[in-house]
Length: 610
Image 1 (cartoon, one colour):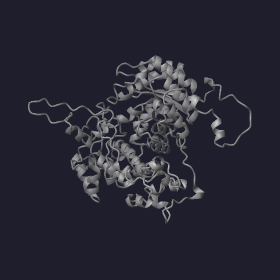
Image 2 (cartoon, helix red, strand yellow):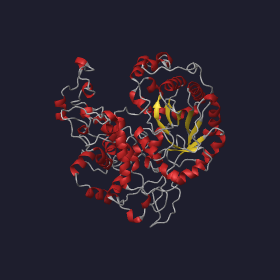
Image 3 (spheres, helix red, strand yellow):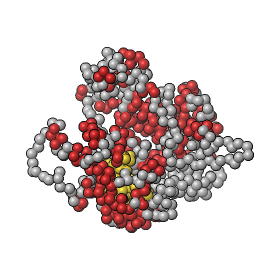
Image 4 (cartoon, helix red, strand yellow):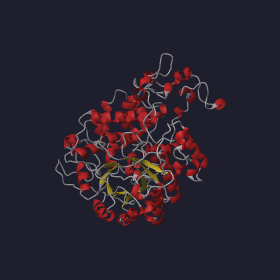
């Protein structure tokens, strides 16, 4: 499932597998076997980074720890200690409290909107060069004085604007943090007419549709508020065509007439909440991912026209086989949402999330809870399949409780209900990431699902892992956490090799991610900081990768945490750091210094409690 896949990346299960590998001594269970000459202690590791990173020490202290506390202690943990929560020193005569293991979402992290976003913001009418008319009229609270805005605007972050170079025009104009690349001598926004093109991303939310959804709120039929297919196209000035009159817009396709989803043997990038955004998917496509899927979208939020939820459906042209994943607990809303998306976006399949383990979803009857609600589950699958013109897929877990597998009983029913493909994550909801995925059970489920294709998911971090998974008879493998730790995993699987990628190559990947992020989220201050935050979330997983050349035994296993080690160069060592302050330092190499009030804590507790 989406959220669960990202949630457990930093947890190191007790179960390790092979613990008798050769080395200087018996390796610790659950710890990656690194060559002795690279091993070091926690103190020496941080001393090395501090000694090598003295070029801007004051800035680093300010960015990483503004309270003056020890950087080795994560901010989230200090907050818990100050609040007297588990981890507090026991008073005399009292039993010391046992520290609970960090799991799930880091809900205790402070949610603070940077105050500099609201200070001296330029009016959107000036940014979009329509100064003759302000969108807000007399009620406008934004600045209309460009000169005053430029006096307080932070310095540019670089000489090149990605949007200007790729699309011939930067829509953020003077507010762009790279504005020097496209501002004329009088502050006008320059345009390269011969290169102007609209960003190629598809599946955006049309303003008219958003207004209709908001007015309708949660009641009424979607078809009553949406234009019929074709009427909107003619109204927008499209070219009229002549040809045979068809009834495709009024007669539903029969199941045998639907497009087939033939992805057997292909590498499927899992829908990863938070980290599986469009820029990250572009990185994975470049390294060989065949099938991509958008992050989990909540159907009720889509039906309400929420901009942030519709953003999860956006598709880049490089995503040639692309689907969206929906989460919901009720047949009526799920079916309405499927019908709405069928008429408004371009996808190759729609996936139902029946694997989400988090309480927020489970307690409302969605995600994993649907595995215990067979009647609702059937109505959802049948209803969505009836209104969709594209194949419907489902992602499930082995079950809800650890020793009570349900998937083998559900798979034949899903096949009869109309699912075109099912992906099975080899863990239960209760189990989370405390044990390895059960590929033996996945092999049993292949027979139960036949002839419907079954994809397997769980613990794929090398081409050997993928090969063993394919030997179970699955139609293909879905890669989740493995792609977060090393997105070049897709190349390794296709080329059947271990890639000893250098630190400079890894930094170049992060640079490409920031470019894709600026294209996607914008090059103004808000866009830059949103790109930075998603980069930092990804870095909280990337730090768990151990370079191939440092390992005593290949390959690294997904349940093995890296010990403290010094890499082959400073950058490789910096990328191995598990401190948020060092992740921020890497982000500053790519996106410039962080704002004065910048605060970052990982979304997942497991990453915050290192």
